[in-house]
Amino acid sequence: MFEAHFQTFEDPEAGVALSARLSAFREELARRKLTGFVVPRADQQQNEYVPPSEERLAWLTGFTGSAGLAIVLAREAALFVDGRYTLQAAKQVDGKAWTIEPLVDPPPESWLGTQLVSGDRLGFDPWLHTSSAAERLVTACAKAGAELVALDSNPVDSVWAERPPAPLGPVAIQPLQFAGETEADKLGRIRLEVDKLGAEALVLSDPHAVAWTFNIRGADVAHTPLPLSYALVPRDGRPTVFIDSRKLSNVTRDHLEQSADVEEPEALTARLTELGQAGAAIALDNATAADALSRLITAAGGKPLRGGDPVSLLKASKNATEIEGTRTAHRRDAVALARFLAWVDHEALSGRLTEIDAVEALETFRRETGALKDVSFPTIAGTGPNGAIVHYRVTRKSNRRIARGDLLLIDSGAQYQDGTTDVTRTIAIGEPTAEMRDRFTRVLRGHIAIARAMFPDGASGAQLDTLARQFLWQAGLDFEHGTGHGVGSYLSVHEGPARISKLGSAALKRGMILSNEPGYYKTDSYGIRIENLELVVGLDIAGAEKPMNGFETLTLAPIDRRLIDLYMLSADELSWLNDYHARVRHEVRPHLDEATKSWLEHATAPLSL
Image (cartoon, rainbow, N blue to C red; front, side, top):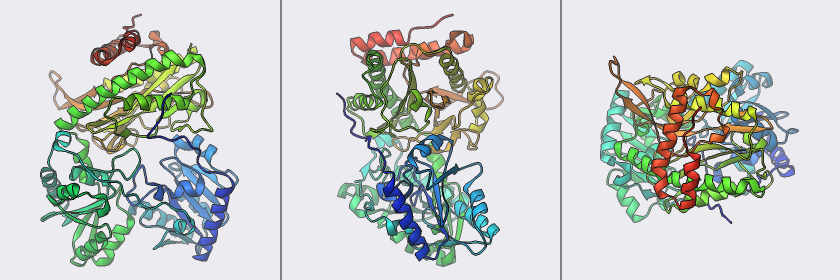
């Protein structure tokens, strides 16, 4: 019926093979005279999605989530995950070989404090940890009288016999009609930031920053058009892009060489050593620069200046071209979403559909727009109890039939050249229970509170996060993930530095795009999440004594009216919902076939008490 081109449903490896890998890994640690080793879910640049050659944590443990860390000692082995992945880790990891521990509170360093003893030698790969992460490990080891040992080669790679090769995805140009700003203008702004930092040069260790600065995109990792690469931007003079030349066509090389020198990745080490020997101060991104870079600069006599990457803020505030592009992308995506939601309503009550059917269908509707480059992340389609797993990914083994009485949670997104989308809808299959309606309406009220928020320019996401949770808190409920994350422009669907969460300290600036996605999850029963993307815009408020901002909702998809308890909504909340549905109807209806138009009319019809 449908086919998914960008997603697979194979089960990750588990069982005896993974136990044998752990044993072989411990033998390698003993050979290197190490007590243990830290295995992060990371590549050299701390990317969320990493190529198969960097999936060391998944290869060793079986855990396939996008955030985690393992520590292997001679007698103990622990996997550390956050609240999004607790249920998933328990299903994927051998509980006899591994304990599952919290990633944040308490952190892995606390666990190390209970395990290490004086004289122990804990190894780590300095290319896979930031300097901040390495310093936390140093402190934990020092408290126990143990030693943290930086290794020249990764012991996981020594026992990973069939490790895939590094990716060589072709690089493409992101033309000015989508980028909205030339490389020269971007470099001019970046150099001003380098000067403010008091640095001779800035290392762009985040490939998103390289892609944005030089208006290129790549194909090295799934779902994000990244060219794995580095760049060095001096305060004065010509920048250098460090990238495997096999990824470049003559056209893309010519494009890059208009604004930068192009060298192989290995040349970065020599360039930093040369600058360090001259005593240069070199700015590094705390979030993505490997500890190995700091060590290299320091060893050469230079001064690493660690801090926030100034490019991340420049990139996060979208220009007028990018904003118009993302509006266009969301209108296009809305047509695919309407077709999908109408299809679910028509087919699901038959009892024949499965989660995989839903994933394949939604991807197909998006492909039929003729503009889909990729999905922006693997679609989360969880029905019934699977919906309670926050970052659930359906496999052939876990695939569940969509049944009457279920809630189907579907969280998905698309990569189009003019914008990146991310949307979640929760769909009632048949008649929902009173409890489902109550929980859904509390989530909806939190969602509306964020969408309607007015806040001073420079307010942080942490200041808004409570708005999304207030109605759940009133019933003693909550959700264990952030309320929102930044979103790129045909780049990462999860973009910093801004986010709406209790940890969201970055200022929300006009032009930023953030998700608004409160939820509720009842373990082994159902999950609820409502997600739209929001653009930070200026507000004109009469009598305001300071600049004020609010949100423009970009996502255009019906919210399931069957799950709303109208008597729980205020008049203002009901007005927002009806206005939103009227806008969806106005912008999407002209692009639909007659049957889907009829469905949309019903799905967005005004509600009244």
